[in-house]
Image (cartoon, rainbow, N blue to C red; front, side, top):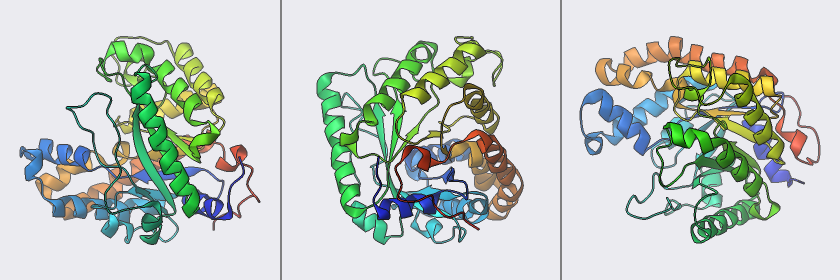
Length: 339
């Protein structure tokens, strides 16, 4: 797929010297409130916005020297964006957080008061939206979602902003962390990749979960769970999902531990999956939330400077098998290497 000059410039800004996207994600809003709530014992609505802003600022300042980019939200994350390392690009989320639990289908929505162009004006090198998607949903539900992605793709194309589509696989009637969903997750992920690589969506990079639930992989982390996939079967699912992609794709950590995400990248490498990096969030910084809540900013800074940096470097080591994004785009030129 040919890229405009503006889109290529944006992708160069969020990738490393090798064309790999080694990005840090902290665009969480409702999910971050829940982590603060669990650590403090307060209800989520009692969590202060200031505390979330301060947490994002510390994560950005301390961890972005080890990342090619950071993903933030424009609601609470813009102060953190200004504190990122000079060489780190900026992705901004465009979707509303969460979904209406009273409506079927987990339908998406965009933030009010923003457009792709306005997010660029806030400094975004690329635009990300999150979509809950199941190939098993009704044609009516998925038709709404397909049109929504097309609309965002058209808007990003007009702004010449790289369009990152984050796909979160689910099934309306199943617990995504349970064994029954684990059995169909490979199909959900692979079919979603096939769908949104179609040219009409104008997606530039797919952000997807790994095609298996890592808790059910034989010999995985954590150990002791029911085994649904042998290691060989898990590797085959990684390969099949990768082969379905005609666009660059990157993995999200889906809230798993740093150790578990490292194991997932090990399986991806074993499969020869042609992924182009990661947008890794909670696996890097999640355990810093209770440190901040219970012991304050100084303790958080110490934790991020040691454990947080160790976590993100662990992920970076796992990216040795990643492929540059420009392998799957007909870019006007190979990007110059970042210094």
